[in-house]
Length: 130
Image 1 (cartoon, rainbow, N blue to C red):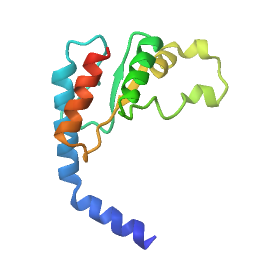
Image 2: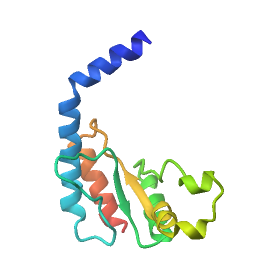
Image 3: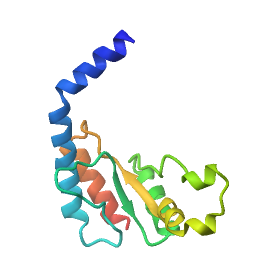
Image 4: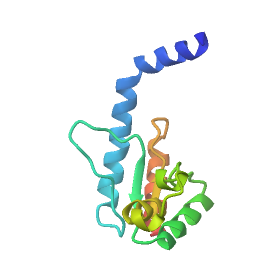
């Protein structure tokens, strides 16, 4: 629609700022979480994070953090979509790595509108609750 096109054009004008802000937040998370008991997202040169997904050793550890930080008002999210093999009703045992990633991953907020105070609050909450 015309409205969606106008919004899209405006976002394109702000694309560099949005990408830089995501990179900045991702770097703050990286440096704050580098010695924690979870895996950080893999990075490649020139990329920028769309989501900041951390991976735990177990579903229980992931869920423990999820419930604690959500209780503090942080909108952490589980993976948005189930793995493809589940939709196709394929045998889960043949997709061990995918199942593990799905069950142990957590996305913490990374959107460009986050203030420095909000980013520091998220960092503190994740550190204190892991």
